[in-house]
Length: 281
Image (cartoon, rainbow, N blue to C red; front, side, top):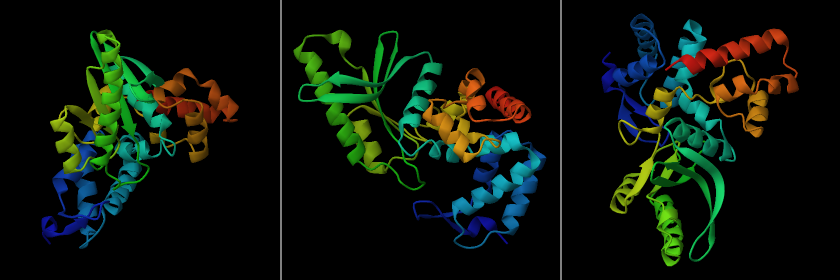
């Protein structure tokens, strides 16, 4: 059977031809070698059927990879781990700030700034050299919830209101050089077209090519604690509520594991997992 002729169903309900290359690429990014990838692909392709969802394919690949290497499985589940940062979206803002900070920016999260008409709470302000970025984060807790054109329209209006205020004050040092919208899902074509038209930088899971959110995370090795195979869901939520968002945060703030009542043996295993994930770049 030629599996490339099969149609799969995406999270948004669209139909696309199955691509073994895409599955292989995502497995390769996890660190799996060619023999492991070939074995997983062979198993997945033998179980494909018309209309199978991308979620089902992902779950099958994840389980097969987990049997081979739990660390590779952790890295493979990165996209789902980002969804687990919810439901409030605040951990996602902290995560985006950490990614920018790793690129040399000084960051502030949740700062209130005066606009010409009203005040605005900005998710992330990032500064580097003479560059100052206004960044709004749009977090979705479910696959398929993409950002339509209303999102950049709304963010751009806020950006303009703030710029107008500083223009009135004749305070160019407070001007923002760029406005950004960051999402953990995708932007619709209209949203991307609008962003390009008004010079609003749109950063999503897979755009822009070469510096997408996924590529920035892969390059930096800044994995959220939600990728962990050893922490329970309750433990992850406890840590996120204490602003422990990254694997490296938990290495530094390991005393939170004592608060959770984690045994010494299990604590060593968790910290070893965190350290290995931090080294995986």
